[in-house]
Length: 400
Image (cartoon, rainbow, N blue to C red):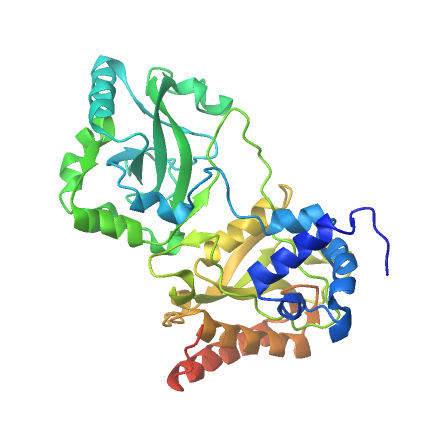
């Protein structure tokens, strides 16, 4: 057995066993999900070395499977189920990782904050749509409901709850602030237009922006709750800027088994396994010859998979890379091609597997779900994926 400084017989063995059971349903399932190979009677003894090889350490393995714990006692999915008040307002953008507050301006704003604190729960939800009258706003966010904060009654100056990059901008605005405890972003593919929530809101846009508006309509609250969302980083003075990258398995084959339906990353009423899924292909944009250190012979690097939100996946991969000339871009998705989404995880897996099988046979595998492939091979893999998902659906093969 390979000796590593990270594996201590006892505590680490218990941690591995717990994760194998709770997350994967057993050691065999954990090995299958990672593409690891070992005799059936050697799984427990082989696991530590394989884990250290892939995750760097047992601690890294635990961290990769750790559920969010910013709020002990309840999970992100409980936020809408605890009877919190809901405030609706507009922002000039959506960057909770550097802006951890909701604030008001001037004497009227201070009075409004005091009045709201007297009537809202502690904490309360603040839903934010992005105003469309600022030219520097990301066009994809204009007029959309971007996400929501869980906001405390802790008062303070704006600069106490925001990153220093904001401190020299619009210095007279939003000084009367409240600290945001958590932040949640709606998945880009599911973001609501502000008129989807209330067609009359735009007529009240100035008041909503300056003062905020309390939402009490159960139908509106249900719509906000049921739109898929995920917890994102919220700024605190001690916020870490690093984004955890998803560890990718080191395989010896070009076919990596699809993982289980995600249940921790994002939230949707009824369970994530039944959330419609996209099939997608991401393409790495840049000088691929330079990236590989050899000629790519006209081929491109792609990442294939399934997700409720391909753009969130793209952002995750991009944030894990140093800033530079290489950018992950969405090459194609089901919705982008005018096709229906897969109704659940099970149907999407069949499409994903068909795509991977073709790429494993006809492209150069680069590890994980990354391939070096020609345009012709990519197109063929995509068509096979779409056809496999369609056939699975027609056969009624809709299990999770």
